[in-house]
Image (cartoon, rainbow, N blue to C red; front, side):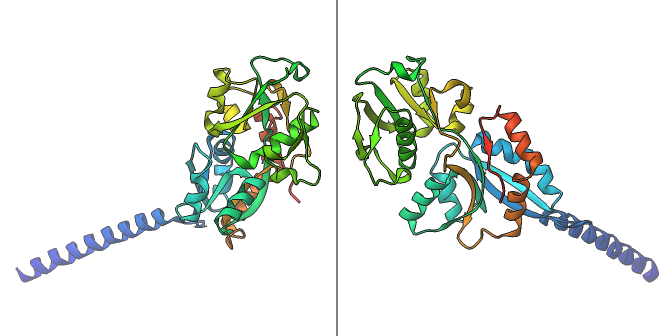
Length: 283
């Protein structure tokens, strides 16, 4: 009888040991270990288009490099940076360089640029005009509340000959108060959130409406085909992958940047958005 009991106990121990091994294997998989080496997770915040779409495209390519990319989508221009600073994500990809510079200036310089990826032309659209030459005296120009874009808008309008900015002003930091000449007496409004600008366009709320490309894409607008005016090819407003200061050389992040800079991905971006999203050549 004792032998029988001992045998049952031995069997139970063996079963528990196998179960424990199975549990350990499951736990290992959950943390990303695999037969081919350790897979590390990278959580990145992005606006839906084109940023999240680009990230979804490179996700399997990055997985081959041992990085499991988790994408968190944001529909505004505030939370991607504040969430990054708070440590809830590892990086973000949604904004251009002057935007990040402005955030750093206002918040104690907490963020760093890991790599410039692409340029999205900001477009000035109109339901009332088909040619910028037809702008009437006193026409309204509607911009968003996103101040880092004001210099960008002024640059576009100045290039078109509609206004002139004061001499000596850094265009990347210019505001509407820096207009020196306004022969058409353009009336500027800038009280609408960036994500609401396409609704303002649909509702025909101004003669000229300035829309960031990522929101334009979501509404079926193509900056190259549909805007009256867009950024020039020499635009300094490259969209960037951003981390917390000191983490820009994180191996996971640099693997992502390298893949985003690859010719395969750059060609895909150009084809996907008909040339209106322009990759930045890696140096």
